[in-house]
Amino acid sequence: MLSFSDRVEVPKHVLVCFLEKECVLLNLEAEIYYGLDETGARMWQLLTTAPNIDNAYEELLTEFEVEAELLRQDLSELLGLLVGKGLLRIHSVGVESAPAI
Image 1: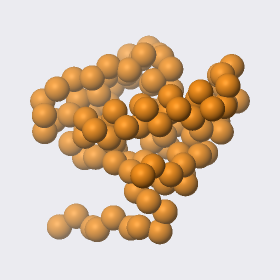
Image 2 (image 1 turned 90 degrees about the vertical axis):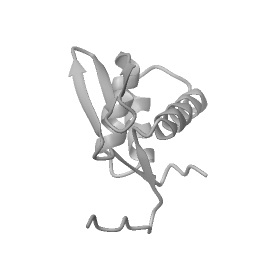
Image 3 (image 1 turned 135 degrees about the horizontal axis):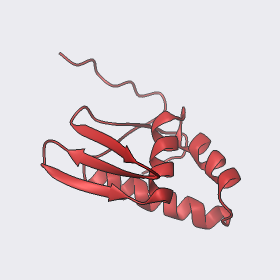
């Protein structure tokens, strides 16, 4: 279950290219491209650079005129989609990832 105290990581098999205010994501394992519009690209930027999902959420609340609960729902849906497509990984608080060999 997703917790906003979790952090987000971009897997090594994902390439990201920002084009103006949008971005293109390439899953090298699946060999499939995905696109994010301006809002999705900003969510991606904050999710992948913030210490946890909640920090990204709080920053998005300051940048966009949106109801808090709607943003929470939209962010959760986007995260679910991106994780499902292998474009992001979620790490729970207190759980360290194993080092690559």
